[in-house]
Length: 163
Image (cartoon, rainbow, N blue to C red):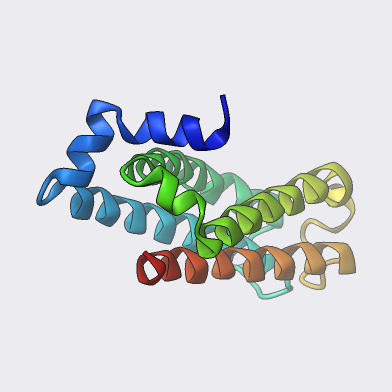
């Protein structure tokens, strides 16, 4: 089975058809998706700005991450579910759009950035956790994450104009 066949089958699922053909289901799901993404990007931005060296009311990086990342992960789960539902309503069309493809690539790069940060930079956090002047690797991870997530938002918004 090809990806086209898989996406076509997804589009023909009853829930996807209801989203595509309903008058208000798509806008409601889209609103939830936008709110969830806003929370994801907002909470990640707080951590990224701290990694860039901006003070966070004298909170250590570890404490700040412990405080905000549960909200980030919950919002991310909601964004994934709502995004999947939106995608399912026109999976064949969306999968062929460059804006959607770039958004997915940017999401993958943001995930890779997070993995690299956690496997390399974060494991030495005990050495720099409370310092305002974070190491260059942490600043690169924070700046890269911020740029990637803002780009995800831009390309996500462009999807609506491309379809």
